[in-house]
Length: 245
Image (cartoon, rainbow, N blue to C red; front, top):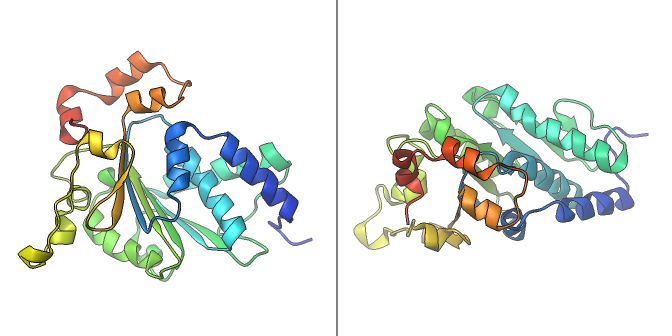
């Protein structure tokens, strides 16, 4: 039998399990799976990597699109693979094998650290996690962004916030889009939590979403100690950087 082969009934079981496992904010991400670029600012410990690992696998099995996972380190990128393996074992008692993982439908999955040379030459959906913590993000993004150049591919960037001086902040604010454009073609992005808590596509075409720990709990997240997490997530100065009203 082919390695990493899934019959239609296997795919259906995974899709069902994926949908049933979503909290409200994850369901919103699932509903926006076809946005060309998703840019998500989120609290720690709300299951983003876990969710996107599953989303990517289900998408690959339904569309045969290759998926590329990029993280600050290779070990971090392997988190996606671990979550997927657990998911497949849990639902189907099957194993995902290989690195890259090659599927019988022709799609592949690559798990990359931030060595830019290794990110060249791939084409597929791009998942780039913890972008606000990646050194030289600007340089990396121009290489990584090319992975999803084709119209059929999409990009998902998600991260907990860091500092406004980090070069991913320009992507978040729309400054990178505006750079070098005549005044008349520049866009203003509304970054208020009220505007972005349900997700909103800005003038630059990016769909932005903010999920604070309070948002996550209000939308069903019941796996965390809220008081403890608020202490860990939210020194006031840190909150004010991005998660402002």
